[in-house]
Image 1 (cartoon, rainbow, N blue to C red):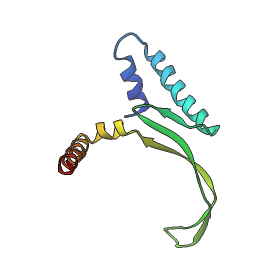
Image 2 (image 1 turned 30 degrees about the vertical axis):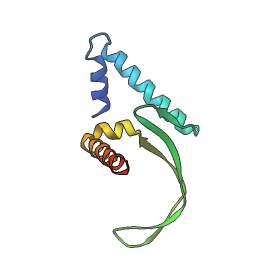
Image 3 (image 1 turned 90 degrees about the vertical axis):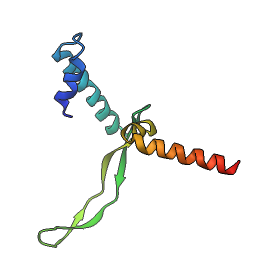
Length: 109
C-alpha cells in the first residue's frame, strides 16, 4: 500500500476531499517523524509502537571488493507490532496457540 492508497482509503466515504485526506496522512506521518527525531516513543494501542534504536559502530565489508569499511554508529527507526496486529495478520497461529493453551489447562486439571 502506498501513501496515495492511504489517502484514497480516507476519501472513500465521500465526506473528505482528496486534499483533506492528503493533509491528514501528511500530518500523521510528520507527527511520527517529529516524535522519533526528538527521541519519543509512539504507542498506538492495537497497532504497535515506534521507537528509535541506537546501532553501534562496526566494521562492514564491501560485497563487491571485499574491502573492510567502517560503518558509523547511527539511530534507526524500529516498529514493534502489537499482539492484536500479529494475531490479525496470522489468524491460524492465534487459534493454534489458543488450542495449545486450552490443552495444557485441561491436562493439568
